[in-house]
Image (cartoon, rainbow, N blue to C red; front, side):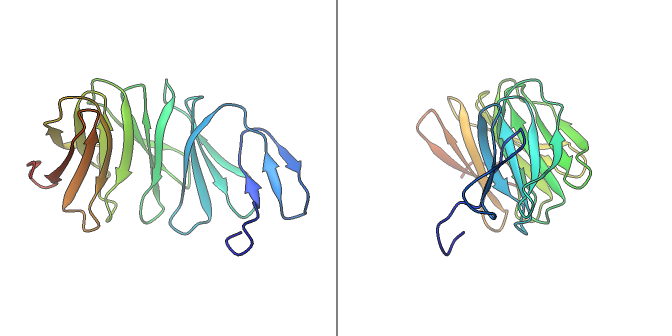
Amino acid sequence: NPETGDCLQVLGTVGWEKRATVQDSALRIGREMILAAFSPDGKLVLTASEDCTAKIWSTQSGELVHTLRGHRRRLRSVACSPNGVLAVTASDDLTAKIWNVESGECLHTLHGHGLEVHSAVFSPDGATVLTASSDKTAKIWCAQSGKCLQTLQGHRWEVFSAVFSPDGALALTTSEDRTAKVWRVESGECL
């Protein structure tokens, strides 16, 4: 609760466990959760886990809505599209996946990285996905078709994270080579 600082719910993988107050409830966690993200409207929480799954939870009820299965190794990242319709996950299995949030269906598996995929995010308009990988590259993908549009090459070591600029025209990557690089999304040119 932003006003009181009280924890209202803790999400996990088992069943409800009552806490001190009626509005405060918790779920026990079965495996380590890597990270979590809100849907744009705040009604859902997406979690990524070591157990190769992502989960979609209702923030209002705390109930599990969907378990997203299909990755073969632990997840590194989960994000929701700006309109809340799609989710993207990144995994140590060398892939990212685009999911339908409402149905939990995998729409596209993004193949093309040679090593673990550390992060995956949507562009501000939701049209593209940006992934970062241990293979020293970042890639830009069409969210609708799953096709790779650009490969951003230039780092000497693993690329740990990649994000879009607020207007979606630029991408920023960070690497173990101790550099951050800014790229033009349309051309893949490093500035």
